Image (cartoon, rainbow, N blue to C red; front, side, top):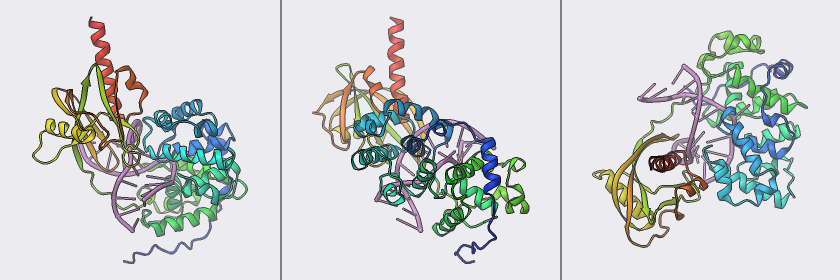
Amino acid sequence: MSKKPNPPKKPPKRIGKKLLAWYHANKRDMPWRQTKDPYCILLSEFMLQQTQVDTVIPYYHHFLEAFPTVHHLARAPQDKVLKTWEGLGYYARARNLHKAAKAISLQYDGTVPDTYDELQALPGFGPYTTAAVLSIAYNKDHAVLDGNVIRVLTRLLNIHDDVTQNAVKKQLWELAESLLAKGQAGDYNQAVMELGATVCTPKSPNCQDCPLVTSCDAHQAGTQASLPVKAKKKPRPHHMLGAGIVWHKNKVLITQRPENGLLGGLWEFPAGTQEADETLQETCSRGIKEAVGIDIQIQDRFRTVKHAFTHFSITIHAFQCHYKNGKAQALSCDTFAWVSLVELSDYAFSRTSRKLADFLQQNAQNDLFIK
DNA sequence: AACCCGTGGGT
DNA sequence: TACCCAAGGGT
């Protein structure tokens, strides 16, 4: 079998009119569809990367309240940006958005650029987001290719090539461009994505509701359920973590993760990843020693939290501890802080760390109630 | 090119 | 339960 994708030469489909008519009659109401402000469009596109509409909506409102214009965002401290993004995931998006806002504010006087080269050069603007902002905010003729469009196009033309291959992706980009309804790129792009999200769904697509069903090669062949074809993903390892809730003078120790990498810039309770022949208590003590250089005394087991990331999963065993000796310093962490339970609400935590923080605050509430 | 980067919902 | 998937980008 050849590894090269099948030639893409198929008769061009004329789907623009049907798709646009369907879209105007069936499009969902979304907050970013009620504005033409390029900053708002840009924000929505960053948040929508690998994230579903229903998840984004509350974050979108919250973020615009905190940062109403690109200038507000540009002059905000990163900690506040991350706090506003807390829980949405893929935090590099927030860091890149912040950097892009600074560039737009300073280099473009707050006006979002309207050319492909200028926009694509900004942090966080890949081929999808660049084309999406240009077409939706400025109605420029650039096609988008995302998970929805890939699904719609591979089914429309019954394409069985592995869409994780770059060569296949390149063909799909060219196909998307060839199908674009010029002059109506913003609506057209949103129409294809809307179709993929609501009708041409991954599992059991609603072909009976599809405006393109008579043009769909996969429906004709009955192969829509097995498209698109994707290479299988690798298995996810599991890790055990020992984390410490370290008390000293009625305050708790929290550490800030390094700027780049997993959960970059977020705060957490210091922890270690369990190694062979190590108890979780030993892991916890070692992790704290490596993070801030202090020795602690472990008291009670506090809570256990499980979490699945994209490429691995973890179980965090958290222990109540108290400070023993040593001068705290930022070693493997970027910074550290001793904070009261109330102050835990001011810091940006990952989901798992936030769960632990919530448990601590609830316990304090319960203790107060009992007394 | 292959891997890294979060979280929630669906099946 | 254990996958898959989501309006992707960076390295």
